[in-house]
Length: 357
Image: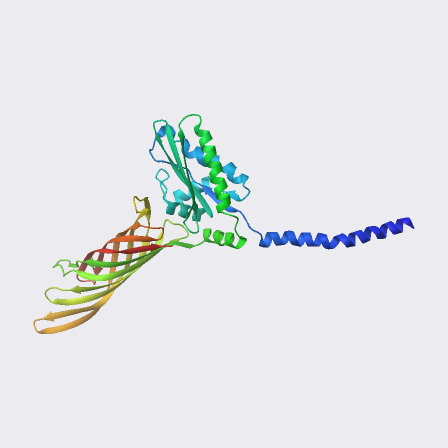
């Protein structure tokens, strides 16, 4: 009898505790689905501004010292630092140069980081000064900036530890965990096929030359082009469209041209100075066609001819980025037009704005 009562008592206790167990299980599942996740942090080597070989070790010592304090906050996932080096090689960013905020954001996007820690140091006699910046990859904004100065002796490692701890504390305050949805967007961006879009809008002028023959008078027109990275950054599809008007010489009284071309480009990025954040130089090679109307005059006889001819286009764009997205843009170009009889060479120059996103 007692054994039967004990059996029912155990069943009764299980009945009372089962809803709580299920509730706890659902609660835990809900935390996974709706809770926050830690930001991914990439720490880059610090730039040796004076290129002093005797202090080159500091460029690695500082970022390595930051890993422990960041992880101890329990708010960040520190990515392997080799990922940053691989991304710099892939993006053709010189690791010995001073990294800009824009380049840091590029590297961060490439590896799927939410935050990039970058910095530099300089030494004068036996004094060393460190400067560190924390970049929000999504916005390109400097979230935290810290500097430390001290003696270049055994105490420099205490200085590095202090800087690392202060940076970590401020990062934990300024960069709280994010939603899983936001993290998913970042991961999807990292695995994207099309990225690093650039646009140019320019006023252009050129002096067409018949081969053999005379120069025509200068043209004036507008030019638009776009390029983007496709899977890998080594080959970037490029497309352009232009419209120019030409005042001719001799029999050609005037002509207009609409130009379409498509090809490939690649952009090299360099550190800027002053108000210029960075400089991007992008040569391109494209093929396309020109079409339009030529107005001719033979004495008192006037004639209009519609035409469409193939072209080979080459040149380069030089962008001086004044902010993360906007640049003053210079374009240099040469186009070869050929209709099967008379080639026409069109060297040109353009000035305008560039935009990247």
